Image 1 (tube, rainbow, N blue to C red):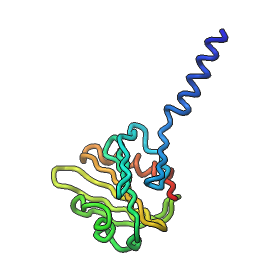
Image 2: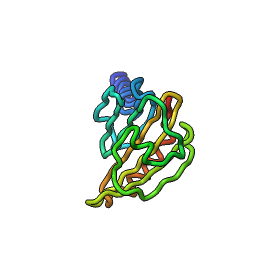
Image 3: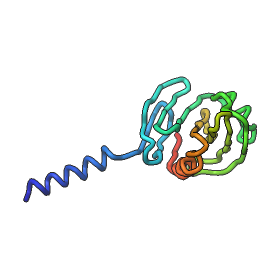
Image 4: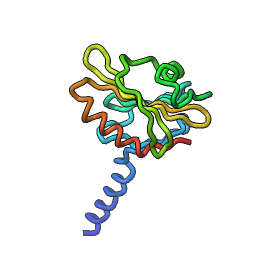
Amino acid sequence: MRLASLTWCLLLVWCGFGCSRSFSSQDLGVQYEPPSGMGLRSVAAGPPALARFDGGLELRSVRGAAPALDAGPEAVLAAGLKAPGKLLQDTEGTLPAGPVARYEFSQTGGSRTLVYFVPRKDGFVLVTFSAPERDYGALSARVERSLSTLRTW
């Protein structure tokens, strides 16, 4: 009986640490919990520092002067990312990480890309998510909900 209790305790501890989706990186200067099913695939120190997750999700940390929040996608993307298609939406808002700009793009071939620009003192973070049109709606909603967990330093 004691062995079964010990086994359950070890299993709970392992899941508490091993099953966690939380991601933290000094190179990127972020802490983030991606949506379930979008586990970490790779991290590169950069520059720019880059974390790739399953399902088309990426976090990119760009050091240096950040463009103004209202500078528009051309200025933001020129500083850290190639324009991923035709701009569909350009809005500003706020997350727990601070003020953000949100861009949505459509690409030929039937896919979409969501980009969040998160300025900070020493640069900015770009959160990008790309998926085929058929999967984009449900998955992008999960990504956007997960951004409430994004913290920068």
